[in-house]
Image (cartoon, rainbow, N blue to C red; front, side, top):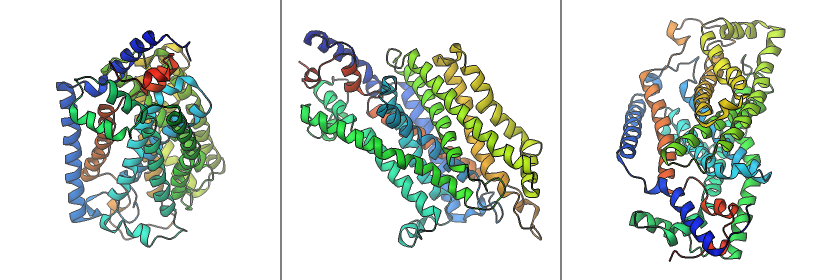
Length: 452
């Protein structure tokens, strides 16, 4: 924390910080309207496709008896993965008192909320009868991993929302008391309600700190559980490609890679769009690049372990699966994923130039694309090679390719996730104002003053 400034200096600095960090709230132009239009249009098309699927059943998808999981489950695993970054940055790094992560924590929570919310929606997408979803709670069995998954997804979403909202309360009060005429009246009314009568006394700050710490500690086992339980949906079977004991940590490591890449992209978008270069500094991108190198190396280790051990034993079923990945029909996708999602990014990010904002954002885009393709590779090839012989079925039952309906619903899921992030950015500051101002030396008493 910087040295405490004089009251007059503190007020001027706070005015500047508040003005800069509320720019995302007040900025309204044609690009904003166009962005909303694009997202709502794609989400609407996806909802139309989902309506067709509900009407006609899962027969409109490429899924059949043998490949009973398809693009939807790949999407589910992907969104669960990126949601885990909230636990890493907003909780773990905060508890370790790593200061550079503080301005990034709200961005990480935006990604976490959008990711876990869409993970829950996609599970319903994958159901042939979504009207029976309530039966999961009414008649579910504890022995079913699906019950565990639904439970941890719901719990993680609840904690993520609370971890996003509680540090937001002082900011809402700050905007309520110091907001300008350029903020719409309806937003000011929302802020007044959500601020819960905050007046910034020491007892209230103590309560916020305590609540944040409890949530940060609580989200660690829940965050690990959400992706570990997701991995158990696969690893609890005997299928080649899934029958492994490392899937829990393997999925968690991959989740950190995907989530960190998503956060870097969002940081860069906010930095450029809302002119936040002073807040998302080169330093933050440099550290995020180093963090990405570390989690990519961990994930690369698990990738090597995933394929080296079965390749060494080369059992019949494992051999078929591995040949399909390495030199078969999935080889282009497999090697593209390994090269552009791990090996090349690791090598590039070792150099400081590639840890600058624009190069790192471009690298993160490739990592995120490769992360989605990796989830597709985890799901589909294994299902195309069952243990039991496939006899007396049409040829297209033996293979899987997504239909236009699945692609439409997949586009809906990405548009909906971006829409959630956009709404959060347009409603609330993307960096915690009071925490940032406090680190810059602004006294808490100044933070609680109404603007004169």
